[in-house]
Image 1 (cartoon, rainbow over the protein chains, first blue to last red):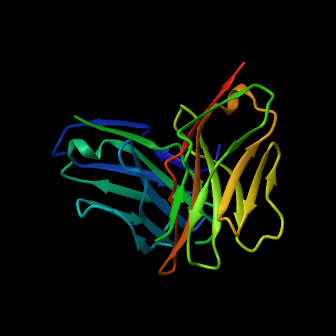
Image 2: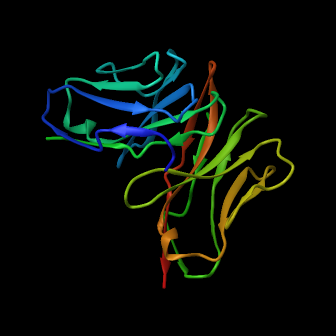
Image 3: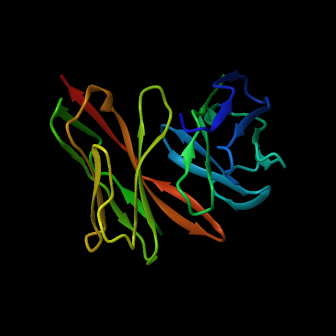
Length: 112
Length: 116
């Protein structure tokens, strides 16, 4: 158990819908990262937050947004969902931006 | 651009034997970090081992060791005394600095199967 929690574990929804994925980092970790894992793209970095502030964006679509709250948990919002958004979404946390990233169990999203 | 290459899509090993999973990387940064993660069929990503570019010795963590050859830009994972539970996908990753952030760039992974 990495100490990073993600909810829900599984999510099935329809095209055009909006979903919210939630992540709680390890106790004391200020950095939260979001990654997407799909069969065709592999593991891709989406976005990084540090202590509530956005630090970097990767291959994140405009339909996707994230935030980190004062209690350090983070949410990834995915809207106008398409079939191609079906993937495993991971949250990871680290104590400092250049520290080891520990991953949560992931949220498996299926868009039908 | 920073890149991780894992050339072995799949590897097979007999239980109790050692296996080496290959990873080569490409970067022009003098300071970098290399990681290995394990992803069992259940899907979670488990951190295994870390090697910093300035570390003098190869990293070890229990049955995992990293064969770090800086001049050749390789960071191969060695698993000794393989166990059935080692069957999983293994990903090599490099930490990439990006404007105050440090994201991970992953290879495509190697699927390891341990045979009894």
